[in-house]
Amino acid sequence: MGDMREKLKDRLGERARYKGTFEKYGVKSSYKGWPKVTILLTEVRSVSSNRLITDHLWFNETKGFQEIGPLYPGDIVAFDGRVKPYEKGYVSERNEIDTRETDYKLSHPTKIVIINYSKSHLEYKKGLKTFYSTCPQCGYHNALEADTCRRCSYRFNVLKTLRDDLEKIWSKETSQDPKNWTLEKPSYGQCYVTALLVCHVLGGELLRCDQGDGAIHYWNRLPIFKKYSPLVDPEQEVDLTSDQFGLIPPRAPDLEGKVRKNPNWNNKRYLILLRRYEDLHKPKKSYNQKKLF
Ligand SMILES: [Zn+2]
Image (cartoon, rainbow, N blue to C red; front, side, top):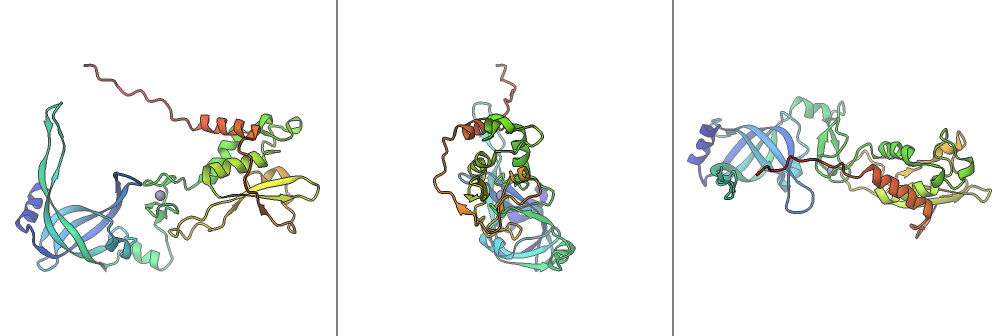
């Protein structure tokens, strides 16, 4: 690889047209906010001579890349770029380590276009196959099987995970009718505290309705996620305790849900539920090997 990068050195400062094969997206840590999205191109060649310039290069996902994306593995991308040196490796004076060396990259890619669509991209265009789990929160194109966004940690199966968690922490102490609460129907009497917890974890609004007999039922409307994913209903209503009503719908259809403003975050039962939820998600102690000297 070093030899190939040397070829880039020969072209220092030169602005020319290159092409490369998209392999995958990546992330790299960022000074603040979510990690930055990176793009791996392999087999980077000069367009004019077809000469191999380097076997791989990582790019930041600049606006130009965003505008043509998403890219699919195997897509061939052409762009204008300039060869620039950069320093890689790190230095630690304390440990007398210095791995710094100069390498070369193609900077400021512009006029980016896909010149050859891969099979997977064509299948996607025809609507035959989807290839990514695009994050509704940050837009990162995750692997299809991802549970969690690699970039912003959004949990794709967040509602199922939350329901599973609730089943571990609901109890008669958190039910509004502790005498009739049983393990067989753990969501019984838990609607208010559950809706508060959903609000706490995911944001959005608390909805309520009178069920006709004076009893109030609560559920949630999730926040409107950003534009990135067509998979998320922008006004998704979620009722994680609806099963307590058996087959009967949790709210009479003629009674419209109303937003409950300023809910009571100091509700005793909610505070118990919240504490248990936080205990469940406490970071596990890690025992890093301590330095011996
Ligand atoms: Zn994300």
